[in-house]
Length: 621
Image (cartoon, rainbow, N blue to C red; front, top):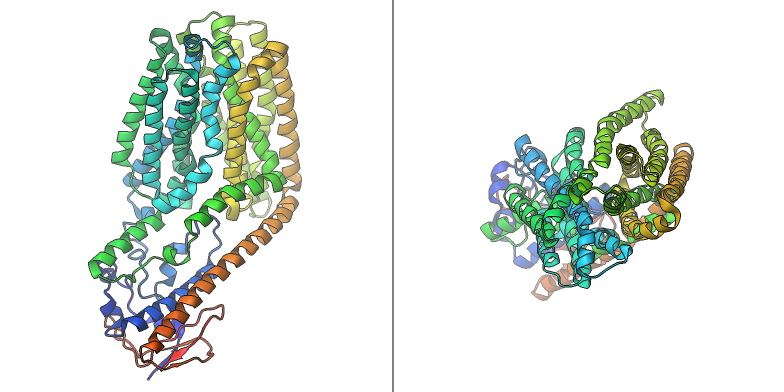
């Protein structure tokens, strides 16, 4: 009889992914365990899972998705029933897709993500017609028709993101776009204002799905060193969507009934949905591997085949709880997330304030037609385009130069200097736009101010989003989710007070006040973070790590108790069926006969596994 250390002994066991033939056909229980009794096989499985769970907790530090490094391939020699990829070049792994397939998926998710912001603002030129049809005279209510769509974005992404980790990206994206389609139709069929508001909120809930998951899809399929161009393509959709929609809907609302805004939107929605059904495939590795394991279980009749995520991952309720609570905790306990998030939120809020108030400016003050008024949205759109073409390369150049000046060591704070463009352009743009509109200057003048704001928005979003990701990669998902929730709340609220503010202060002084707020927020918070960010990060990271450690300890304790309980029950079951059980405390050994490669596993003694955290260790003789 051979007695070997656990890791070295198990390393010689055949695995479902040890060679390609095994990975493609799977392995039956008999091929792995031979004629060992079912109870002993189950006991061995429990102990192996306990070892894998313990090792997994030691090697991973991801936060939300808990994706194991290499999707569990580093653990395959420890667990003979672990299903993972057929080697590092497995074409089924989304990271190994051919580039044409990757770009096809990137284009599909970019179009999906375009649709939500496009739907949010398409109603803006038609609001006066809808208000007239339902006898509404309050402009705040008219603004609510647009902004209530954005309110859903503050809530739904916290729920959708963990759902995509349970059911997969593809199905959640398709359901989201289908929900958006259904409630866009419902908006067109609405008989009163209340119905429109309710259906617009529910449509916003559908449009929130791609916004919450889209960046994750890009990360699923592209490696870090090739992701820049893909992110650039992906970001075009949500950036240009809010501006492109009113350009089109202005002519629709002028020529047809207001319902046609929703019918055209439904046609676009349906075309995008059909395109996505054909072009978008599942990209989330844990779900793909779970599908693979399910298929292999049926082919081999071995119910013990599993993925690493089925052993170690968070439960659905744990994922949901983390997705909801951690961004909120970060937002209100981390001064960096709050300060920079406030700047992003204010910028986003003014964008929707601009979208809501543009029609009244051009129709009532400049006496443009509804169609021409829609074309005025091209002004801030040009600002976005200029920002994308100038801010992105400038930010990269400054970032790399600061790294070179710091001995090649990168700091998140190096992402922030270019936000100074926003600190200057935003207040100047707001004041320029406000007083040009107030004095009814030549129509190009207000558009110049709106374009300056568009440039500033790009600089603020690109620099701060990059900083929030870099400041602590372990909490990147939560940091960006906190920023998304914060800015969506501002995108909902700021348009609602636009009409009362402009009625009392006028566009000139109203925008001057907003410009002063932008100047204070845009200089104070980025400056403090740039010079003191490193010390603040150390303080906040320590607090978050302590909180995470407490959560992780509780979770590990629950897993350990469950596995120990299952092991104890199985040992007692074996003993009750006539086996003699001798409980001995041992130092983590397993007793196997040396298996022949590819042959069934032979038991000279009943195997013993020991987990790294010192749980039950027993030997059956």
